[in-house]
Amino acid sequence: MILSPIFPAVKPKSILVVEDDADIRSLLWRYLEKEKYKVVLAKDGEEGLEAAEAQKPDVIILDLMLPRRDGLSVLKELRGKPELSSIPVLILTAKGDEADRIVGLELGADDYVTKPFSPREVAARVKALLRRAAFPEKSSGEILEIAYGPLRLDAEGHKVFYKKEELELTAKEFGLLKLFLENRGKLLSRERILSRVWGADFSGGPRTVDVHVRRLREKIPLLEKALVTVKSYGYRLEEEP
Image (cartoon, rainbow, N blue to C red; front, side, top):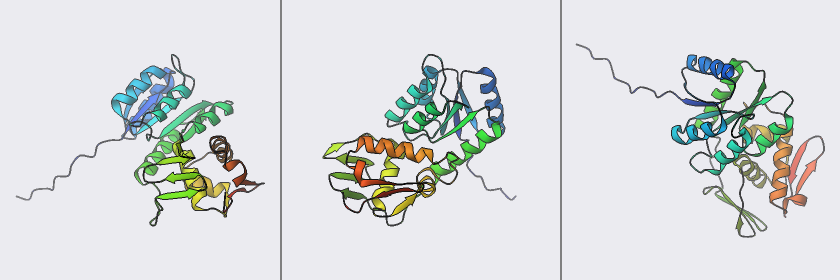
């Protein structure tokens, strides 16, 4: 008798959907389940946070307009908890809510979709986030510590110090700063920055880069002059601070 090899069952990726609209919750649940994901549903911000802490999902789909606790508040708390901070978050925004979308990106959201949307588009974004989380971009000769005047970046510990004081940066702010420090003196286009820090699958526009650069300048005064804006192109970090 020939026995077939036994392979361990592949655990399905889990997606937490935090959305107060029952029709949208149902739509996403049906479509994502069809795509073989395990879907967890939450109808408000408080319930979403509780589910995130209990389930540790692989991706969170987060509406910004939520009862009890709004999505931006939920996102901020997620990024402040070490055990949840690395979970990719896809935010859902109304078509005209550009300000909320920008704030969401500032707080560390990984991507966004505007309503109305197709479930197919959401599934494609989820797939891209899972792929980027599974295969993060790494350089073979990565420098573990970079000094730039009073600024020091610890790549291995994922920490940044300015004048010996540790700074609180989002994951995207950290990646952006690291990219500039590794390419000081070089002119980087917004498109290249988006590709390197957000990934080739990110669908947001160059405005995303500008928002994060502004946040870096606010948190690190040294960069107000050292990080130069090159009009209509991108940014360059000076060779010396």
